[in-house]
Amino acid sequence: QVLLQLPYSRILENEADFVGLQVAAKACYDVREASAFWGKMSIIDKLREARGEAVKEPAWLSTHPSHTDRQEMIDLQMSEAIMLRDACQCPRLKSKDPRHSVWMLQKQLVQPSSKGMQLKESPGNNDQKISTESIV
Image (tube, rainbow, N blue to C red; front, side, top):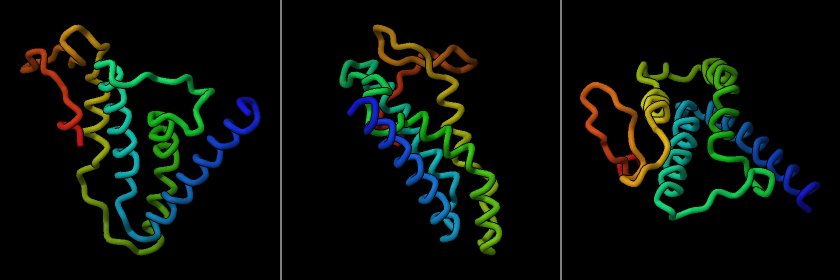
């Protein structure tokens, strides 16, 4: 099962994400939100792991791609989805890309510490704590 079914299941999940992105594009949704969603899920998982609320299973044992992998796959398909959306004569996307704030937060996350998940030191950042509630 581990060698045959689990990898196939992950392939099907990636295909479902691709089809979902196409459907969203044709329906004139902001397809960038899909990437932002999986990025937020990834951040929440990391916070839960840091607090000991969840244990990360090895990728090869999972029936689904990781949230990070899903975000990366969707980002790779993004230009095609946006072109499809444009071909459907959808209204222009907002100039503010919903992925940017997620990317910035992902770049700022560092390893868990005794104080909880911390942000890297930056101007105006005094060891801020991050909660799952502030992500969603």
